[in-house]
Length: 581
Image (cartoon, rainbow, N blue to C red; front, side):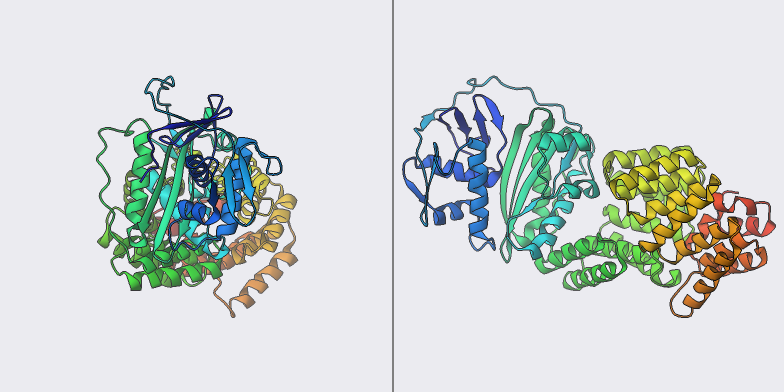
């Protein structure tokens, strides 16, 4: 329920409107989060009286909430004093009574509300929005997965508003705990509005506070405080998204039908799913394995939980992408999970995305891939992952201009993600726009100089430009940062092209030896043979990769294999895969 009260309260140069949740100083809005604002309202309700810490805790957090009350309350009071420009040692407004509580000491004037007291402001035009990471008020770092997971769920819920451009999770998470002002963050993300808030939870209850800020003039537009049983959490997310949507453009799209009520989910299943998301997004093989265990746990607890199946499919897909096992083992698992998710709920966009990825990388079902991408885009137009999948498909099909235009839409939703900025370098490389690809990879490396994939993609374009020494240097660094056997194979190829045959052959033997201990794709070994000019071995291994349905064989149409295009064996393989040639 939203905070509401029928009065204005004035003190000093300040005015509090408890109806809108606003604090103003000489008519100008002062940004103040929900907890500090509620503390101020309680103190103003009892001016001159001692308000105990226990009373404040009861107002600020629901009963049985697992929160470090001392830390949380001290933080709220400090933020309140900062907003009021008050001094704890020589207070003008809030006096501290050690071990007891606080007292509001300035004169207070209660004013009956008058509709036209403040000149009405026209609703701002909002076309873009970012949901900042919700603050974890538990005081327990182990609960970060819950606030982070809920942030992602809220972003997904708000992203369903078709008329809004909503920034994706990967671009907002770097602002977690940031000390920047909201207008500064909005400028960097190129958005009109910001949603910020906090999460406090007990065993089976959760409280979420949120507020919507119009960034250009730091204007408070809306605030809400919600308390629910944990099994109602999906409905709670939908309610918050609907409240925000109703504030934006007064129900954003009047013709848009309301969202269907979210199904109730088993509380422990929901929590397991959040933990799975937390580990999945770390994107390391070990963390992905943890995430699949949590998603499986969620499914066992709630077999009808479609989103858990979709998340499991994505994690299994990434394990296959990282070469953590034969493609014939990893990708069918991902497909089965995605299909199950869609049997339970056809509207889960993440499952359509996962199925599209399997169609592209394993089944080479190009018509099916495009259909799944377009359905996911219809269901979730603000999901950057969806735009990336569609652009990737178009790029592989050599529809390069369309792919680049589609990828730029993803970057509008994810403007500061080094992952997406770097991958755009690969899209440009495939289009043979090598100078642009190099510039794009440098942008990603400005954000994270140790991002291995950006170094990898940069090295590919440098190789095509004939800058082999620089290419080798980038491949070496990418491998040292954990890029793995595929990058090692590309390094061997680069050495061969540079005339350093002994180094190339050494890497070839290294990969062959390693293949006796772990899975090494025949495609990777073929890459080195191609650099050495041994085309008989190259095509023998490429045929093995085709039989194993190694996903990287779709790279046969990429620039690094352009010299093989006249060979009938290349043409036969590409035809069987269904790639343009």
